[in-house]
Amino acid sequence: MSDVLARSEGVGIQASGQFDFLVRTGGGFMNLRKLETQLANFTFGWAFVYLCLEGCVSFAEGHMLDPLHLLHEVVHVIGMGLMLYGVVHSWRAAPQSAAGILCAAWAWTGADWYRATSDRVVELAEGHSLDFEPIKMWVVAGFTAVTLVCFGLALFIVVRSRLRA
Image 1 (cartoon, helix red, strand yellow):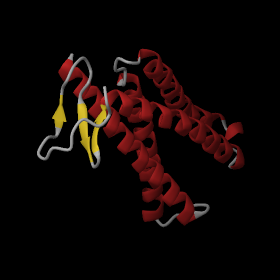
Image 2: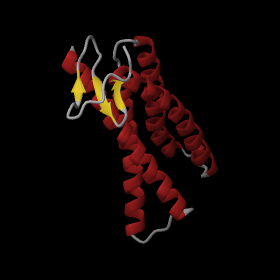
Image 3: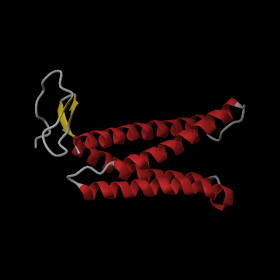
């Protein structure tokens, strides 16, 4: 099936076969399976960045030796594990849709980053200071935004694929 079917006006989504929902994009239509593959590929890269960043920050701040903080690291490890499992599951399921685990991974990770952002906002509102205040705040808030957008995209893929099933 061609990625670009038509450029007709007023068409949002078409169905033309098993899991061939097409999403209207600026230049034509995109197959949802291709969109899911792109999300899985992005998720794979994101998990690597997430692992490196979280590991470096935790090590630099001395959290690796703090038993109470290690309990929080479990949340990150679960998120990374869900991401990697979701990526492999999605890749193996092609050409069928299997974005459910990716959706759960992005929801889990988005909730964790949202918590991190809100913790920092509360700390700043209470008059505390953060190490590397502006950089840390922007990075955490940016990561939160990315995770929530990816969660929304994964949820969209799951919902649309279920409509066809």
